[in-house]
Every structure is written in C-alpha cells, then in structure tokens.
Image 1 (cartoon, one colour):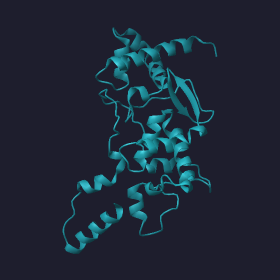
Image 2: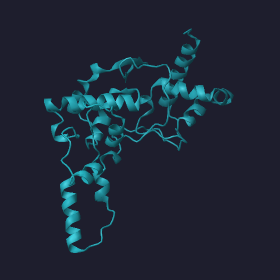
Image 3: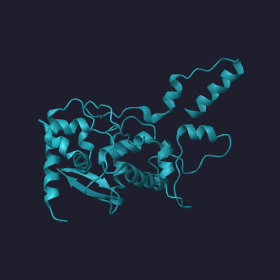
Image 4: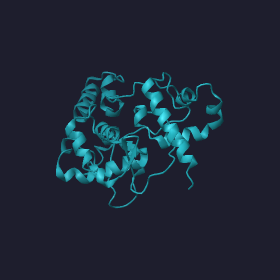
Length: 244
C-alpha cells in the first residue's frame, strides 16, 4: 500500500495535479478501522483520553536498551523510507506467522499490556491485529497471540480472564475511556477506581449503577452492562472490606 501510494504521489507531481487529502491517505492508517466486536453500549464524551493505540505509541514507550524492539507507524515508515532502510523489527504483517517473527510479536504483546493495562484475550489479539493492519481477528491470529499468554499474569474476574504484566496485578487501575473496548473488556479494577473517585456522587444518586455508567462514558445502559457493573460493585465492596 505504501509503495502504491508513493507511486501515486509521484505521478501527481509529474502531472502537476494538485493533491487532495483523500480517502487513500486515511486507508493507510490501519488503526482507524473499528474492531468487528465493538461495544454495543453508546459512549459519550469523557474529559480524559486514553492514549491512542498506534505503533508510534508503542515505539515511544519501549525501553531504551540495545535489545529493545522498535516499531514504526505507517506514516513514519513513509517519511523515513527514502532517508534510511527500514528497521528489521518494523511490524511486518506478511511475516506474522513466521517463527523468526516471534521475538517482535513477544515484544509487542508485552508492551501492549504495559501501556494499555489489563486486557482480555480477545482485546489483546484484536489490538495486535489492528497494529498489523487487519480489521478482523481470525482464529489463526488469536491462536498466534495465545502462544505469548504465558509471559503474562492472569486474573479471573467473574469468569473472564484478564492479562496483566508479570507481577503487575493491582487492586485499582486508572480508567480513562472505553476506546474500542466493550464494557466487559474493562477490568473491574478500573471500574472500582472510577467509583472510588466519585463515591459520594454515585451513592447520592437514585440509580447508582446508572450514574456509574455515565461516568464511564456509557449513554445507553443495557441490561447486560447493568449486570456487569453490579458484579463489579459487589466485588469492590468486598475488596474494600478486606483488611490489607
């Protein structure tokens, strides 16, 4: 896609045709595509913003060591392609299932968990797929990402497994926004954190669960979402009562 786009730009220059910011440019930004299993809850604007998940974000958070694996976003690759060869560790979708690509995928999985927080298996596989330019996360992709689960800590939350960094499970994790997650892909530790921040407001509400859902950015509270928030609130009450 990058090669074709570069050829298109050169052709426009030769023809002296003014270039317009077209859909082609947007198509190169693979992360703009919505996941196929996006939340059915309707999000509302929230004052804080979760860091946008891009290859550049991953690059900026990698440890500054010689062994660190580097990742470049599509626009960064295009800008630097003429100046220097691409890094051997750049995300390469065509090598995704190759054994010699495992080190790159391992570093990516670890960094996603480190920067994005607790994630379900589905959310983790989806994020890896999106960073490689795929909208859908098929069985082969999920199976490939599953091979790296052993590098992470696991926490069972009401029957759903959340993955954490090794020795990184915490009772509270900061919530920013849903992003592309469904509500059930949000750890109860994030929901408990939100209630910690607004305990008085939620307690004073006629419908505490509805008030909590609004704080989480949900405009239309489904029955399933209400049930999940009830479970998380019960866990928070028990967790708060447990001596530490």
